[in-house]
Image (cartoon, rainbow, N blue to C red; front, top):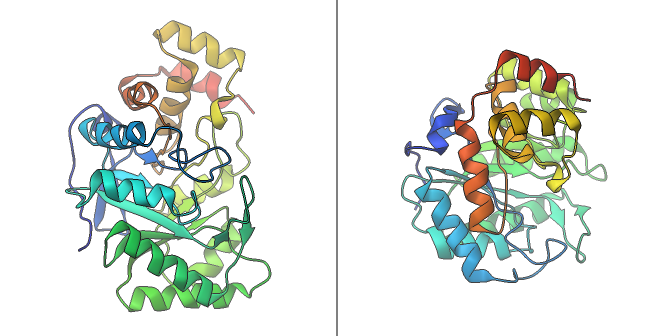
Length: 289
C-alpha cells in the first residue's frame, strides 16, 4: 500500500500546511523519528513502549508527516513507526538512504546505486509500503559521481518505488545539479535559530517552492541564548517552543520535525505551533547568529 495525506486538527494544524511536489499536503508541524532509538542513534530505545506511545500521541495532536531514515538504528526507527502507525491512515512517512552505520554515532556516506537500492527496498519492507511518498538522499557521497546517485534515484522513481525525492545537507549548487536529473521537492539541512549556516538554501527553497526541513531544529536541546530566554518568559513558554515557532514564522517553506522520545516533550513541541510571536520578537530572534 502507499501512504496518503489528509489534514488533522489542532494543535499541529495551527502551524498551517505545506504541499510537497504539488500534490502532497501535510501539516508544517511534523515529527522527526531519529530519537526513537538507543544511545548514539544505535539499537533499540530504552523504552520501546514509550516510543510507540509518542508516535501515536503525535497523530492525536494532528501530526501527519513523520521523518525517519534507514540509518536510524539502523532499521529501528522504521520498524517502530510501522509497529505504531501502520497502515498510516492520512499520514505521510518520509525516509532516507545513503548512509552506512559502522557503530554508535558513526555515519559514512555510501551513494553507490546498489547500496541505495538496498536501502530503499529495506525501507519499503520495514514500513510495509510499496511506495515511499518522500525518499531523501541522506548525503551526496563525494566518492561516487553525483550524477550516478541522482540517476539511480530517478530510476527508483520511474519504477514507482518513490513518489517524491528530497536531498539532505546540500548547497544551492547541489540542488540545482540534482534538479537537472530529477524533480526535487524538499531540502533537509541542519538549521535552527542559533545556527543559520544554510540561510541561502532556506531562501532558495522558499523561492523555488521546495519544502525546507530543518534537522536539529532545537539544536539537540542546547538553546541558551538570552534573547530566546527573554522572549520565552514573556510568552510563558519554553525556549524550545519559541525556537520552533520562530522557524514556522521565519519562512513558509519550513516543514519542522522536532523529535523526542517522551510524550511530555512531544506535547510541548507540538503546542508551540499555537504561540504567536510579535514583530518585535521576530526581529530580535532574527538578529541571533
